[in-house]
Length: 500
Image (cartoon, rainbow, N blue to C red):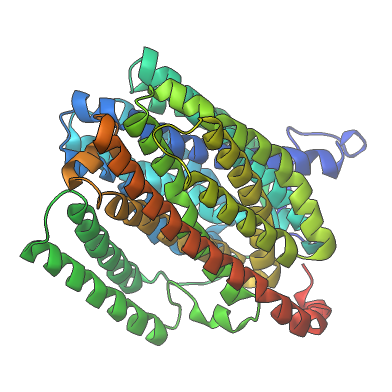
C-alpha cells in the first residue's frame, strides 16, 4: 500500500478473517470526521455561552471575547508547527495526541473558577484542536488517492456541519436550561470515544522526516497577531489611545519581522516556497479571505437576533440550523464533483453563493421577516460546503507528499488568520453606528436594543456585511484564477513522482 497511513485491523485476526480495507478506511474516516465535529461544536457552542460565562466568572466585557479569540489564535499559531511534528513523529500519533489534549482542556474549562482560568484552559484546548485540525488533512490525503480526496474532504465537511449544528442546538439548550459548564463537559465522553477508536483503527507506516521547529517564526507571528488583535479588540470597546496605537504599531512591526525571519529560515513556519506551486498560492489566499469574510457571519447574525430582535439564545440558534443541515447534505456531492471536474468551479461557485448570502443578510432590518435569516443561512451553508472540500483537495493534491503535514497546517493557518481578523473587523465596523461599549455588550449577548438604537445598530451590521462581501468576492476571484494555473500544471501532475 503506497499510503503511509493505513486503517489498522481491530484486534488480532487471522488472514482469512480480515475485514475489507474499505471497511477500515471507512472507520478511519469516521475518526477524522469526529475530530472535526468536536472542534466545530466548540467553535459555535461557546458563542452562545459568552453572556453566562461573563456573569458567572465575573469576566470583564473587554476580556470575554478572548474566550473565543484565544482558542482560534493558538490554533493559528500552531497549525503549521504541529503539522511539522506530524511529519517528524507520525501524523497519526500527533492526531491522537491532539484528542487527548483537547479532552483535557475541555475538562479543565468545565471546572474553571475565574477569568484567567477559562482563558488559559481555552488556550490549552486550542493546542489540542491544533493537533487535530492540522493533521486531519494530511491523514485524509494519505488514506485516499488524489482522485478520491475531494469526496473524502466532502465527508469531512459533513463532520464540520453536523458539529456546528450540534453546537448551536446544544449551546441554546444548555445556556437556556443548564449550566454553561456542560458545553465543555460534553466534549469529554465524545473525545475519549474518538481517541479509543483512533488508537484501534489508525496506524502510522511511513518513515518519519527529520525537521526542526521554527520557534522564532512562531513567536514573531504570535506576538504580531496578538498586538494587532488586541488593538482592534480594544478599539471595539474604548476610544483610541496611546497604548492601543502602541499595540497596533508593535504588532505590524513584528509581522513584518516575521516575514523577514521566514525568508531566512531553512525550515520556516510558513514554507513560502510552496507558493511557487501554481495552484497553491491562490488556494491558500482564497482560504484566508473566505475566513475573513465568512467567519464573522455567525456572530453578526447572532448579534442581530439577540440584540436588534431580542430573541433568546435557543430561538436565535434554531433559525441558523437549516443552513448547516443543507451544508451537510451538499458537502459529499460537492467533493465528488471536485474529483470529476477539478476544484476551480465548485470552489468558486461556493464562494459566489456566499457573496449572495451576505447580500441577503445585508437586507435585514428591525421589521424584516425572520425568513430572511433562514434563507441567508441556507445559501451560506450550501456555498461553504461547496468551497471547503474543493479547496482542501486542491491544496493537498498540489502538495508534494513529504510535506503533506506542512501543507495541511498552512491551509489551516491561512484560514484561521482570516477567521481571527474577521471576528475583530466585524465588531469594529458594526460598532460605528452606536457606542462601542453597547455594541460589544450586544455582541456577547449581555443586552438587547429597542427603537432607534436597534435601527442604528442594524445599519452598522449592514456595513459589516457589505465589508464581508468584498472579502468574499476577492476570495472568489482568487479561486477562479486557479483555472489558468491548473491548466499549466496538468502535464506536471501526470508525472509518476507527483502521484498520490
